[in-house]
Image (cartoon, rainbow, N blue to C red):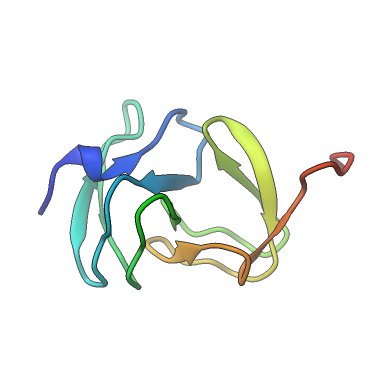
Length: 97
């Protein structure tokens, strides 16, 4: 188990966090999400500054990072999974629905 500083979570509404260092597949991290601290196990290697799902995200669900919508899931994303262009599409410059 590692320290909470391994993943940045800004808002309770965030469903992804940002890795502050490389995280290895199978590593369990204590995540501080406001009042909702939890343990999270990485399902893949998560590279420094990449995103990790804090909870399960359904296809079509909005992805929140730092309290802002950054994209939409293109498929189911499991808690602990790497979140990137292979499983979300950017909503940058698009009018939110």
